[in-house]
Length: 292
Length: 258
Image (cartoon, rainbow over the protein chains, first blue to last red):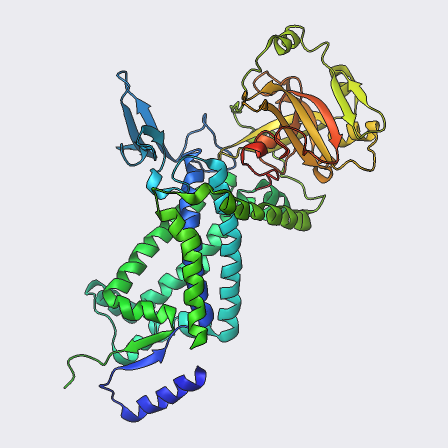
């Protein structure tokens, strides 16, 4: 593939400035395979994670935390004297009524019950902590192995350095500001600019690949009493098992946020072209508009 | 071009197997026996990985007195049902005996006084419930290794089974009495103790009086309460539903280091 790309590059250079659309080879095979395996893993991990969370839908800071301790975040329910269930979310001292979605929602069989997250975002849909854990840990292993392949492949091929590391020019405040404004105006790069990730794109990808995903793994390991005995520094790093559980939850939420933005950007930038590039590797570059 | 088809196929195969499975809310196959048996394979991987990395000697963190939870949550059985246990509580467990039998050279019967006369260990450790909460408590008791050394293990012994006084459920198949089991690596681990005290007081009924297991590198459901008997076995196939514990019989991991 490298040879083909070089040929295309030469041909394109000869025609510069280009007004033709052209096809470039954008994503390596390792990137494409690991991307889709990662998607499956992250979806299963998020949904089974919410099943596990539902077993004790409260988060604490520090080494310990249980019913008698004050949670930093809590999804709960209250029953009024006439038997009506109200779901709520407590963050610090604020309380929100979330009946129907969080705290109180319908079971797969239609019965209104007390449950943290609703059935349509948990795996399995019905309440089963043990099964949720089985799904979670199987896909956690697959997720870690897949991420490892991506890291090794990305380091060996230079993908991480070449494609994800921002260039010094991209790190200038002016460039970041311009990119920020471009994003707000939903102005997507064309021509030569579209061949590289823009600064905010790089920050987002590095933030997920380099920070959020490793944080998920490390905080996940910190919740394992076996791993805490093997790597005691984990507990120190996250200031306790319950803090690690809280960070695990926050980082998972940030991953969900990333997925929403990521999918929105794909849809806005041209879903067929973007999706094809992550399946076949081929990406079409369109010429700059408005240049006569 | 063939190299392009691979990821697509793999994606589709994986997607169909798991992603799709989760989305079909109506006919949810997330608990089909075939899928669950594949998922279960992760437990062996986790067990081997943690044994390889931590081996016999890695220790659970021990905390200071200042870290002890103000309230240590009572979970599982609060009071074992039945007259037999009530009678034991009534006379302060004076007639209670811990039996140690199975694949041992010298079966034992130990009273609480006998256990207090053996070497003691005190540890302030964190208890992690499978549900997600944690509590820190100060446990005192006899290292299980001390008891097992007195009994003398036969070469065939592979697991220590803790038989308990409480029924956590009366299932139609006759099971439901609480029990748990650990391998010999955990049985001889220095922090594995048969605890008779929590926070400098004899165990309350809620916390498993008169004796409970502490196996500090595993989750709460392994910390069997109301221990009546330690049986050394080469297999737990014929106990309960054969998975090595009350909760493992009901889908939870036998190895609860995670």
